[in-house]
Image (cartoon, rainbow, N blue to C red; front, side):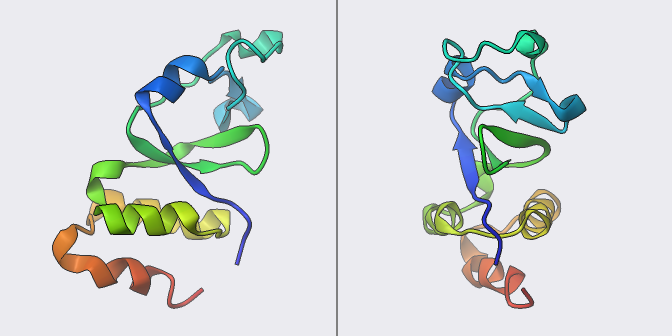
Length: 117
């Protein structure tokens, strides 16, 4: 089990966070826009509201892997938001969501994603 979490990037968060590019675009800054003083963060990452992103474990998150919140049921969403997993586990989950989706009728598919971890 890893120590990273997913979070939902809401429209409000998108307008109040710095969102500056970190690590050559692999990550983005999650500090409040008024609190971040890093000059190089004037270049902003391309992000999408109402999507799940992987927290980087500090004051940043990963830009490249994300999925629409609407692909999960409310119960599935609550479960994944409480989970702590490795970066590889989350990348796998987001990939499955983006390619196959889970949907309400397939509630157990989310559990199967983590059976091998």
